[in-house]
Amino acid sequence: MLINTNHFLQEQIAQEQDRSSVYNTIPVDIRTTLDDMAYGIAMKENLEPFIVKQRMVSKLNMISKDDIVFLLENLSLLIQKSVHDGETIDDKNVSKDFVSFLIGLYY
Image 1: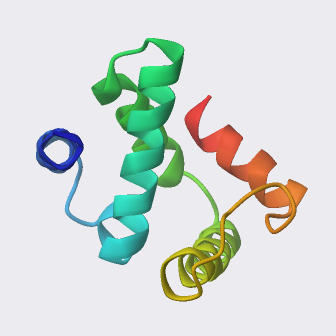
Image 2: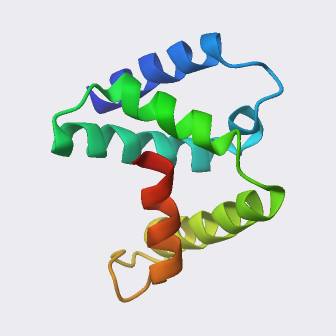
Image 3: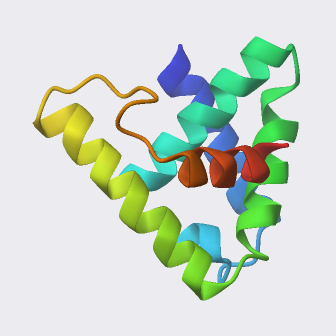
């Protein structure tokens, strides 16, 4: 169900966003991770998933190129650790700056 919900949310966002948006240029694995995070936040905070994702996409489309690089580098590293190295992602292997950055994308 999570995959279907995320796919539905992705389609809705794509319809509302300009094709040249930053969000649409982010690699699929990172977009999927961001989508999953938005969905998780929505469920935890009892919010509408579409609204959380829409807010995230809007903020992503406004951040600087340096911040996009920061996001891509850090999420790629976490995906590598989690998926390929089998590490559990927690406060010991994620920088506080990156956690703060991610919180800013969603809230």
